[in-house]
Length: 74
Length: 564
Image (cartoon, each protein chain N blue to C red):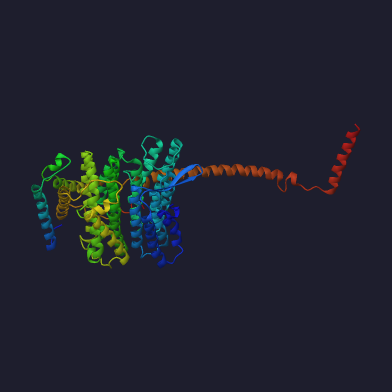
């Protein structure tokens, strides 16, 4: 749905800024990890975003199979 | 010498029935006092304790405290106090008696050092928690409670069978670490697995919990499943199956939570997913991982109770927790909304909140053992937690589209319970050493490293970015007035149908047999009536003169016979 409220726009813009800052921070400290892939640039960021999109979009598809009316068991 | 009457669980179990004798107002306050007394008594007990009794030939250990049972008992008692404060405004007598009974039996089960005591407490907690569901007296609570009871009793039966077989093999009833090497131990494993909501054995949880009252669900969310986690940790730490069972548990409920409409059921799926993290910790089984499980159970009981409390407050004021009916409640219930957000931040493991310092231990322990795939599954599940508990629950009830619902803020006692719980979530998150001091094993773990903090923030904020992208573009699944099928469908539809068909067949066969029996019986009765009835040959009256004639004939016959 389109965003109308100004304050919500501000929240979304600040989210973009925080996300960008969190990515850039990677250059400013020495990173450690148990696994090699943890050290790829933006691994956690990319994994978080993709995992989230996959979960929500595939669950939406799951609805086609599982959705029933509220009185299904009555 | 510690007397058995200082047993905190026993104090609750024995005290609960007396609550029923009090008036409504007095009972609510006594219900707060009772777990408080039990908590104070518990804090006087040493952290290592074993009380042995012999009953006939059996060596029993009804009170056993070590590092693991100590922390679980502590958080159970804290939860019991919080639930009592939360439900103080109510006057549901059955519920107010059942909750301390349930909490007490769960605490006694955690402190049980032998399988027989464990079994008895297991069953009392099953029965009392069913009473909590029934006490709601809603349209669905009776049948949901019945299904719940059936499954809990099944778990108890498996435990009993396992216990008997185990005793037969080892001549010991002590509850210690078991290996999965015999039928007895597999039975016990499955008994725990049912209560721990293993995949496909899980659906009793999502089915029943949303049908209890506002306070009833808060109580239910704290004890049963964490009792099972404790039992698994005591008996089956390091069992490799648990790694993958736990991994599946963290992942699959997420998908159901995304499309579920009833927010208390969303929280039940989320509970299931959090149990998965604990089960993985048990599967790893190192002292660090077991600390992770204990710490996560501790934090989870608090933030999950907080989330259920906030949704309970919504239920109390609005009468529903269906996302499709809610929205914009932050205007009417700002405090409840704030507490809900704290619970959401804690479960999502945002730095400075409790989940961050407890889930971190489990992920660290998994990585230390080199299970990279398992670790990725847990990371995946962490992104999922952010959606259903971190965003969906607070967003669709308190924000999103304002439905024009206006109500009073939650009752003061509910707010107080939420405030204490929220304070605990933040305190643990900000000062994790307070929690780490309570853990069973010593460990070297620092949650607030640059790596852990930044990577976790990246994961959460980019997942949040995913939500914004979907929501703004209208791709986020709408909240619909509908239900979704889960494994309970199996016994609520096909098995139910099969059962009713077989019952019908059984009844009709009984009927025809009864008919046959009636026909045969009536023929026999007719026959007997014919010969023995009032008008039959045998019942005919005999006159005095004929009697005299018969007697004289007999005498004559005897006389003749004598002379022959």
